[in-house]
Image (cartoon, rainbow, N blue to C red; front, top):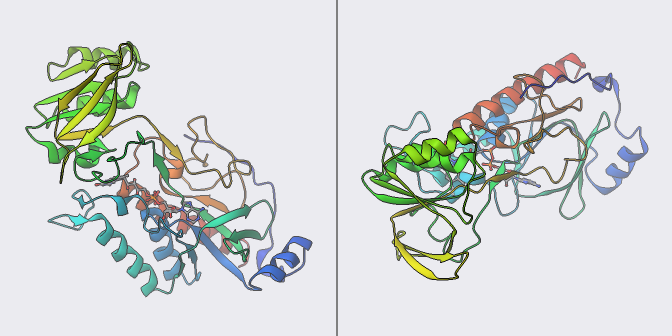
Length: 342
Ligand SMILES: Cc1cc2nc3c(=O)[nH]c(=O)nc-3n(C[C@H](O)[C@H](O)[C@H](O)COP(=O)(O)OP(=O)(O)OC[C@H]3O[C@@H](n4cnc5c(N)ncnc54)[C@H](O)[C@@H]3O)c2cc1C
């Protein structure tokens, strides 16, 4: 994913006094008069890492952490064993509160609010939060993450981190010697299933149609793997288990017949949606639905607007890659502001 953007604006942020444009004046009326150096939208590993770096660079970041989803995706999981620095692993929520505390230690202004509107095109960006307050900033980091698609079943959330997972790389290790299932029919479902055979004794791949959408080469991988059993024309309509997943209810999509499948894990691999609704009409978006960035940088198609984490990443989507990407965005913001005399 490498896109070249030509900056559309030449900025002189340091010299622009507040309240010069009409929209800035209306923003001032609705909110704070201060123009922040940087506002970070999102408080997952990408947002908090960007906050740590920008705070340490004296850019006084404001972090819009989200009203109910502060801390991001890792708040929905139990043990995280692959984030470096924690020999015995760490619980997802604890990892995120540690990152938050680290950002606060350096002075990040963390607000548990959602951005509801972004105006990113001008020199001064306007970020409207719930309640109508408008924040203004010279730079914005978009770190809103990506939502894994869910099956929408009653017990799916309850058993998340207790057998239900959306990430084989993250959780496969916990299923050594077990019988587990993967739902989906695309490349990523087959990739997850074949990866999981490293750990599980048996992986049942459940697909609601009688053929895969996945590429030929991926399909062959699944067909050739003795540990993978494919169940065609089946959809999961129930997940049961007290403390952990014990059984799935499968419905035949042709006959309607319902049958049980005893498994201890269910990996949902039916895609994910980068959270771009607030800004997809303003910055360039890739065919994958992620924010397009220039080369290895975090620069989006708009000057002063940077992206970090899963919102720009169709491939890796790990806490550590999101954190690394937050670092990139923070350094890009530093360079951008320095280059414009801020
Ligand atoms: C159940 C589960 C388990 C996982 N386990 C692991 C694991 O063990 N190891 C690993 O490396 N990775 C794991 N992952 C993947 C990892 O969580 C993600 O790759 C990582 O969280 C992405 O970080 P991010 O900062 O890009 O986005 P997120 O963590 O998704 O954070 C997005 C942030 O954006 C905020 N936001 C969104 N919209 C708005 C808005 N309008 N206004 C304000 N804020 C907004 C949200 O509140 C949230 O704070 C797991 C994911 C899931 C779902």
